[in-house]
Length: 109
Image (cartoon, rainbow, N blue to C red):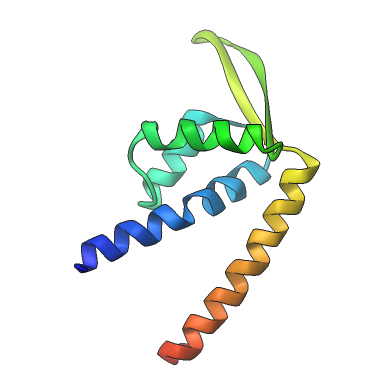
């Protein structure tokens, strides 16, 4: 496995966690999610985000509402449901545990 493949797999694995964290902050438009993910180098393609948001909606973790736009058609804004907030807290706890475990192994503090 090359380091590039390792990097890609880690980012894919963290994508859902990062999207949930972004949506947790409040209503957010899809392009804003993409922009933040691109800036953090987590994702660079839209085709990965839309199926993830649809899956999270189907699971009842996110909801959306349409809002009128001054620059074109209405826009879909996402937010977390109560179940999504609970799920986000569980993901955050899992992340903290994994992060602590890896830091112990590579001896970072």
